[in-house]
Length: 140
Image (cartoon, rainbow, N blue to C red; front, side, top):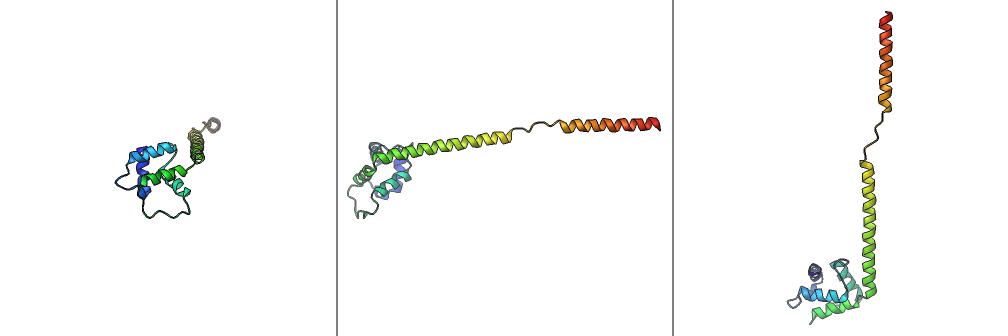
């Protein structure tokens, strides 16, 4: 959670103040139901700014943490649940693709079946040539 908070502080420049600490961000994220298992810093910042699209950015923030909590509060629980579901679906799709790739690689790496037919025909041909050579020597 602290890494996610640090990355959010790096991307949301209004949080880079002396008064905002990573544990403040962690507490706000926990209150909003955002977990690092399903959200990246980019996802959080994008969702925050999407909630205020078209608004004029404040000139000066007296309390950046309150503004951060306000932005997080505008992310609806449906958005959080939808984001979590889409991340889980993407993980399942990625696992299925990986499993099929492993299966294809295993099929490609399997040794080719041994073909004994050419060896048998070579031996038969050799035996026939040897027999003809022996019979021609015996008759000559």
